Structures are given as structure tokens and as C-alpha cells.
Image (cartoon, rainbow, N blue to C red; front, side, top):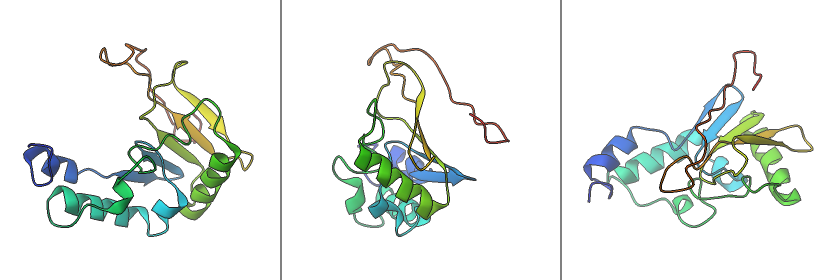
Length: 148
């Protein structure tokens, strides 16, 4: 009950963004597609928070394997050409160059993929939970000068 819309933890989660952009870096649990970003990240966050507070309907973009929470298009060892092209489009729409995602445990630890367009996706789920893979404790450091 606590995580259901209107519940105690859902209300706490409503105060946190679904996705955020800091400079040229976008952070999101699963990933973002063109269809997600056309309305803007603020709109995604606003609609998600309203649903969690039980002040609006569940946004359609939160359902299914292509939702920003659950998509894995950029997290496979080598994203498909189509996924890389979409990442380039998303980054262009957002004026960003890097996306940081989790959700899909990476067997080789934190790693990145660079598209032909020069955009990056950094996969940071190492499966460190004992309920998952007991993977290594790692983090991604993005320095002030933009280096990773």
C-alpha cells in the first residue's frame, strides 16, 4: 500500500524527478526515447509526480517495456544501430551528449557506449544487491570539465 499512488512512499517518490538533466548529462533509470522527450523532461516529471500523489491518471509513458523506468535499449552489451540512432536523436532534442542509466545489471561493471554521432550512454547498474548478482560496488564520476 505504501508504494501505491497516494501512499506514504509514493508521496516521497513524487518529490524526486523521474529524469533529470544537469548540463549535458541526462540521468534516468532505464532510458529515454524520442516519444518521451518531445513534451520535455519537466512534463514527464510533473505528470509522474501527479500520479504518485494520486492527483492525476497514470501516464501512458510509464507503462510497458519502453517506459523510462523499464527500457533496456541502451543497456545491452552493444545497442542496436536503431537504438544508437534514437539515442542521438534524444540527445539532440535535449541538447545533451551523455545519458546515464541503470536498471540492467552489467556483467563487466560500469561501462559506456559511444554512438556514431558521438553521444554516450553510461550503464551503471552493477547488480551489487545480494538479491541480484552481488556485483561490485562502483560509481560513475563526471568531473566538472565533463570527463568521465
